[in-house]
Amino acid sequence: MSAVIEGKGGFRAWLNKRLPVDQFIADQLTGYYAPKNFNIWYFFGSLALLVFVMQIVTGIFVTMHFKPGETTAWNSVQYMVREVPYMWLIQPMHAVGASFFFIVVYLHMARALMYGSYKAPRELLWVIGMLIYLALMAEAFMGYVLPNGNMSYWGAQVIINLFGTIPGIGPGLVEWIRGDYGIGDATLTRFFSLHVVALPFIIALLVALHLVALRQVGSSNPDGIEIKAKLGPDGKPLDGIPFHPYYTLKDIVGVGLFLTLFAIVVFFMPTFFGLFMEAPNFEPANPVSTPEHIAPVWYFTPYYAILRAVPDQKMGALLMAISVAAFLFLPWLDRAQNKSIRYRGLVSKLLLGMFFITFLVLMWLGLKPAEGLYVMLARIFTALYFAFFILLPFVSKADGNGPVPERVTYHAH
Amino acid sequence: MNDYAADDAVPEVDESRRKFLIAATAGTGAVGAVLTAVPFVASWNPSESARAAGLPTEIDLSRIDPGQMATFFWRKQQIYVVKRTPEMLATLSNHDGELKDKDSEKSDQPAYTKNAQRSLRPDVLVLIGTCTHLGCLPKTRFTPNDASVMPNWPGGFFCPCHGSKFDLAGRVFEGSPASVNLKIPPYSFPADNKLVIGVDAAAEKGAA
Image 1 (cartoon, each protein chain N blue to C red):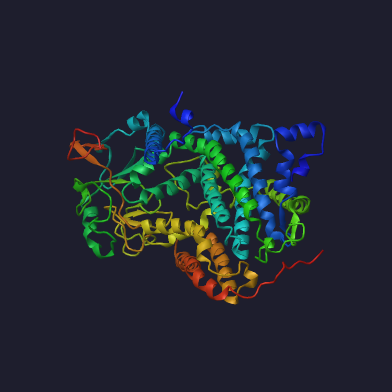
Image 2 (cartoon, rainbow over the protein chains, first blue to last red):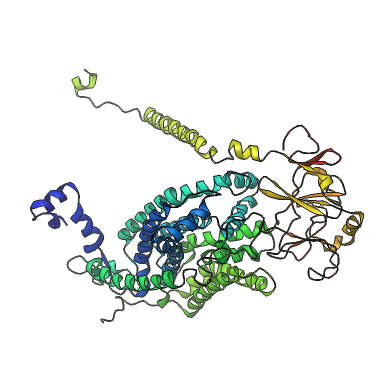
């Protein structure tokens, strides 16, 4: 590594003596060996980083015109998109970006579930990733409340009231979160502070930790075998290639495709059929008029469906909390020898497939009114959701020990 | 000048003394950190003006006709005040079997309203107009036998969001997603036609 730094004169040497730039690039990119058999599922890590940066940049500009508060928030958003040059573009980029963030993160997580990326030695990598997901949920929720539309108001009402179901401290906790007896100025200004300052810092820190942990254990791959087990004479993994230039170039293709889709949605369908921006949020918050039907944004609806599926509110809130937290324990619930779904039995494949379908069905049910057949379905799929986590230890132990190849499967293009 | 420099002896480390000092320093630091957190955590509580805006509200009952409902704001919540007629009161005892919590055992209300009519005075019903399911505003459906709500409807409240149904005492019907009755705020009657929201009937002097 030190060869990178030595042998160069002039400014570069002067700089590297004071700031290890070349060393950093070597450690993180040119000297970081990733498995050569990545497929398209491996786009979503770098895309998540891209969306995060996009949200920060667009967020900085939205903050320049946004005025948090009960009476000012709604008008300032209307003002910026109607009268400030190009804010008609930047504000929807920020709002649509939130949905794209979750699309990318869910696909990134689905990848980890398929290829067992959370299994040893990557447990902490997974746990840090889950913490990012939780922080992101808080960030997105508060961002949704800030414009103080009618769905912002009533959505916040429902979500904050969930904390009231905690025995003993519940009612006081709700008042403490809102800083008032209802959602008001105090609530919106503190959410603004958290959304703009505290949570982005926390997410940035967690992303840095996620990357440090990734460099420590190395990327997993679709075959779920460790490339570090087969080293070449140079001490580098035989099945590894330097992240730069190989994967930086591959990721540029992903970035191009992603930005194309993103631009299509931002320009031609920013509300995305009422999913990315809900109709009731195009009128200001009104404490005396509830929207016909309260539903959170699509990325929260699987958990919302679980909340509503339970006839008892306290139990519902508890089950919802468990349904989110369950992901944290996956590294220890999965007792298979093999990581990748490729080398697991049919039952494992069916179980994971069932879970993916269940998550999507619950997502759809959370958007539907809680009545009649929908309630029945929500109960069935809530049971299936938890069945995945309960059955996984047994199925994976019995079904996940088949033979795996010595080297990664790779077809040159 | 120190002793061990002269005779080159290695000083003996008093391990227990070192452990004690480390623990004492860390402990003091931790206590300091927790105490420092107090102002930051407490700053999230409602401000003085928010508290002032949450002071008791006075309502003139003579402005409400029998059989009618008026709504008021108290602590950013809608308060429903219904003047119940004898006919309305008579409906309350006819559907005990269909209620989830007929005696309000699991529900949230001041002790002096935990009775058959869920009120201090039978003719005046005071409720917090927030559905106990997920916080929507229940609508009035006072006309009995309104088949659009349910067969044999006795009159009451219907939440348009998720279909919770409540009777004229705010008690929830079976088959509703809400599991408890509508909440009741603390209130009292300082005079015959004067209702005060936010002051308990038992302690007229202090705010709730």
